[in-house]
Every structure is written in structure tokens, then in C-alpha cells.
Image (cartoon, rainbow, N blue to C red; front, side):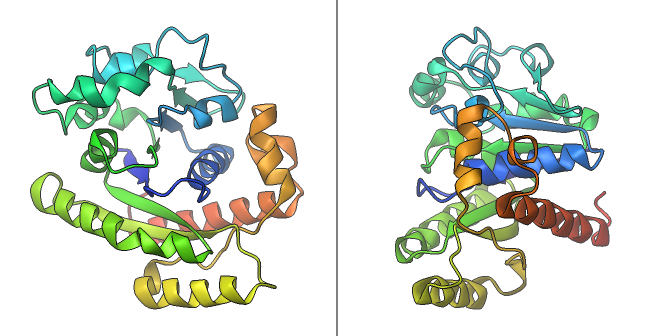
Length: 259
């Protein structure tokens, strides 16, 4: 049975999509069968894997609003073993459309349960908000990975996100847990980066991954080429960091007997 992980942080610009896309890519490179669900109306994960969201006729919208099967809407990517349930412009109206649906906070969970056994991992890229789409992702997930930028403002919304996870656990998904916290855009030369890292470590203790993701130009370039970093520049510092992060994630997962 596959494991469903949501990548969540209501603050935008923290490296959430970059982390989701690149961990998905390195998991596929490690021989895992992976489905990336782009639940963000901005569709950055979709374009980051080489698809034009403006031309896609089918997307995750068709699954959660129109009740179509996941398997009829997924796309193979350039990487063997990595598949995408894409986002397109239709998803922008999904928050409103979901309000009128029965069990509106569990629609994605019901859809993914049908294909969960076909994948080793299902990774959900959440929108930068705590609306119904994110609630659906957390309701469907076994765990959440939280990317946090190593800057002061990134800490401000953290308590709100943790409160949301707690409420989802209490009312919708008792098995939901925090898988781990990833420190992104880290600059070891910056005092504030080191201070924020220390605060996050104090708050999350063992949940914080040892591997941090540095600021890296090649990482920021890769989405414009429609490629994860391992296909764009596998030798750059950012690529090495995501490879190491994925390895750390897999070791922890295997240690818990989940894979």
C-alpha cells in the first residue's frame, strides 16, 4: 500500500513546490513508483515537469469536482516511474465548487484510495493557503512534509499551520502526522538563517531533516525548463541537496517499516 504525503505551508515562496517536485523525481530515480498530485491552482508543479497547464483538458479538477477516476487523468513524465495528476486553470474555481459537494473535505481522499495501492508514494503539492483544497490534501494524507524558508516571516505562520494539522487530525484524519520539516533557501553565511534554523530545530526537534536546501540559482532555473533539477543540472549544489534529502527521507521511512 502506497504512502500519501502532503507538502504544506500556507506561506508562499518557501520552496514547497520545488521540494515536492524534486523529491518526487529522486524517489522515482530510486526505483519507486510515484504519483505527484498538483493541487495548487497556480500549477507550478505541472509546468515544472514540462507540461503547459493552459493546454491540458484533464486535471485534478475533473477528479475532485466531476468525479472522474484518477487513473484516467494522470500523465507519464520524462522520468520513468514518475506520474503527474496535473493542475490547470479550472482548479482556480475548485474551492467554491467544493463547498456544494457532499463530504467536501474528503473528496480527494476517496479518489486517491482507489489508486493508493498502485504507487509507492503519492505526493500532494498543496496551494499556499489553508482552504478546502489543503484540507482535502491533509485529510487524504498519511503525513505532511513542511518546507520552511530560513527567514523570519516563515516562522510567523507556522503556528497557524500546526493548528490546522491538529484540527484535521482531531476531526478528519486521526492518523495524520508530521513526516518532517525541510529547511529551504538556507544561507549558512547569514546570521538570521542560522538563528531561524536553531528556532525551528528547537520547535520540531527530531522532525527537522538534517539535510538543508541551500539557495541555488540552478534550482530556481529548472522549472523554467520544465525539468526537475536531476534532469536540469544533476551536479549542482541544489541537486546534491535534494538527492541527499530524499535518501534521508527513505532511510527514515524504511526504519519505521513503512517501505
